[in-house]
Length: 252
Image (tube, one colour):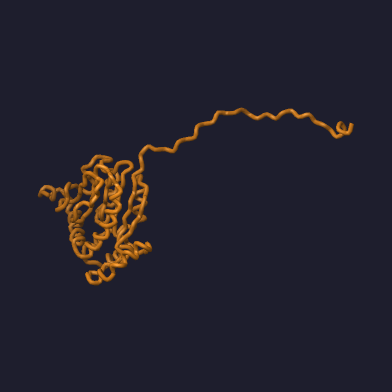
């Protein structure tokens, strides 16, 4: 992290990411990240390849993925970021990553469409893009409307809308997962008392989860369904002449 990197970065974006990072470092943000980490590591455990790229405002290190050789974190010039870049200008070649993780990157973005497009460009055909965001139709989404902290700056884009964007970018949505069913209460004692809500929500797929996790696979470019081979004409069927027999001929 250098002074030059700070000077080149968009000051509005730096302010937004800084507010998000401060909120995620607090008790409510840590609660959310703890539940996200559990689901995220479950999903990443089934992927393998050369590179995993993660992007988001949090201060935590890259998510664990034991079967992927290299784990790289991109983002604003802040502690914990390995490669500094703008949100719409990643220093990666096309199709460079096997897996890309956007953890609240869309929630705290000046241009969610542009960020998602840049992430999609970096995923190889057949690779995966994982998107985590705060669910707008939850107690967490409602709290955002009255919050005075970094949560108030979150976009809280609906998962169905993000799924539509992914489809337009050539991705097939494989899975939707949800978590953090506890309401955003600052009291640690109440959080411990309501901990069972997580198991109940996961078991019964209850609505109102605080975050969503979308797992999408990039379709292989150029594949087309095979056309049926054209059948050769077998010629026309012609009616055969049939002798006419009258009733008079039969009686004789």
